[in-house]
Amino acid sequence: MLAFALRRTAVALALVWLVASLVFLVIHLIPGDPAELLLSQGGSAPDPAAVAELRERLGLDLPLWQQYLTYWQGLFQGNFGTSLQDDHPVASEIALRLPRTLELIGAAAVIALSIGMPFGTAAALRVGGPLDRIASVVAGVALSVPVFVVGTLSILLFAQKLGWVSAGGYVPLARNPMQHFILLLMPASTIAVGLGAVVFRVTRSSVLEVLSRDHVRAAQARGVKPRIIILRHVLRNALSPVLTVVALHLGALLGGTVLVEYVFNWPGLSGYLVRAVEARDYPEVLGIVLAISILFVFLNLIVDLLYAALDPRVRHA
Image (cartoon, rainbow, N blue to C red; front, side, top):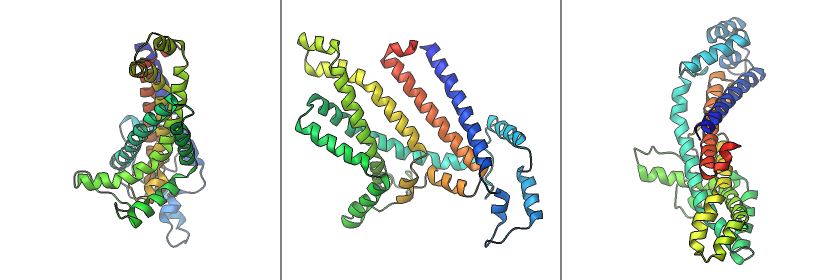
């Protein structure tokens, strides 16, 4: 198990380096000069001398390979750089906004798993029945509706028509815990609609596949109680694909919650990334993408280790 964990960790670190390097190159290939954008006011062209001075001060006049080495030297020292727009440390902004996005995604995952896995298991145990048919139709509809449509309809129904919750916003947990979780509920539920449908489908197909295995049939023939078979033999073996799919979707959601955060005015990391890309703020974009890639790779590393713990055969793959 230790050798497997070390191999996966080495692969994860290589992926982080590769992603960060590719993003560094791509962001520098995007047309537009950050110095000119920062000095442009009212659509008028800035003074070339001022642009040259600002480029020198920001280090943008250095060769690309030297900027790349300087960037990684700062990362090894725990320095993500400073924003080109307001000189704020990028690391502090990420540390402020990232927990909000993680909280949003984590709450959505809890809701999706709490709904998708029980209904997926029940549908598989009663395949072809009314519950299976109704739940499959609902899951298909949930997957086909865009997330911004779900968010907009939620605001219209629960905020404007019924008046149960606010249309959006953010309140720190320490200031008002109840209001914080109330404001968190709608955006998290909006994300959980599609994710829950995915969890339902994967759980259903995985449970059906495990139910057809010989050791499950043998346990049924021996007269083992159905509840014991489901808990010990079926769910444990069916859980691995569900974990893998959820981890992949959560990693994608780290950078894909832009619309949800925008619709519900949730001050997370995705909105910060959009602003940084529009301003060609290299340190901000690189810092955000690096943080997202590290979390994505780390999340998949945890899933790999859990998968190996559930299925020892994976350790020798």
